[in-house]
Length: 315
Image (tube, rainbow, N blue to C red; front, top):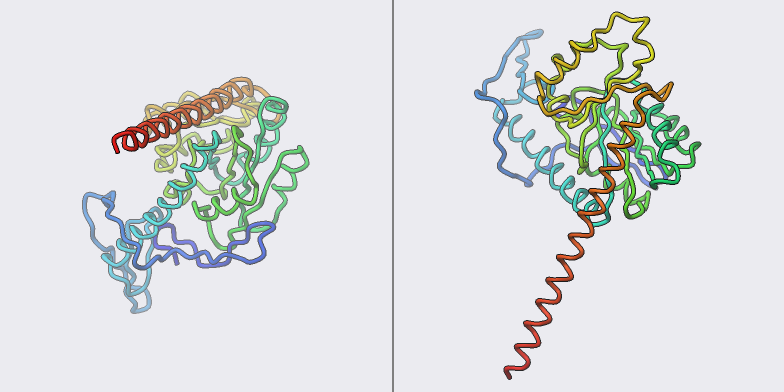
């Protein structure tokens, strides 16, 4: 069991890959120093049928029979350190190629896939879009994305409840992403575990639908703290619901004062222009960062060539 999120071990399958990947969380010998995000560390011990259960302080307060709190904290730190190392590699690759990568997170049924298909339609002819789909089973969402003409690859996590950076790196490699493109990563439907796992994305985008409670940001604060953008989806249904939009926005900004909020309807297209404008600005920024990095590299090469010439001239 993963002590960070509590998901079970299983096989992760990346579409088109010849062999499955183990959903392996414990990375012995790969230790990095991270502060544990709690002011105090102690085990909450409960007895079930005479067996001690030690409850940890991970993203889901995971527990494992007979495991000490110190050991659980060590494993959690190792898991996240290894994931962060892969995420840094992904981010470096995306940056070098001008790829604007977004990690879309939400509860199941929020309308993520419908939003993706609508987004691809709006960007047709303006940007190259590729999608990584995360689900525990089936390739139904990837099939829906491919029907729009965009490239898509499915990751099935089995019992796993989130994507991690290693999975995304493999999937991105198989997609052979174009330079200066938009990569949309649809994470497994879950507002808990994906908050803890950096995939190398530029931003996490939390999608909340008005068919859910307006108190979701307070109930799942880690996700809304980690997200830079919240899309409040299905606003076309507001006349039929008692959802309190101002209160929802207040709750979201209470946990994350800097979160950008866009009200949207993937079904009717309302709010899509603002969302598209934000995406296009992100693509422009990614291209500019790539160009600046290339220019810096060229200057460095020129400096080294000048130094080499000077050394040769001094002989």
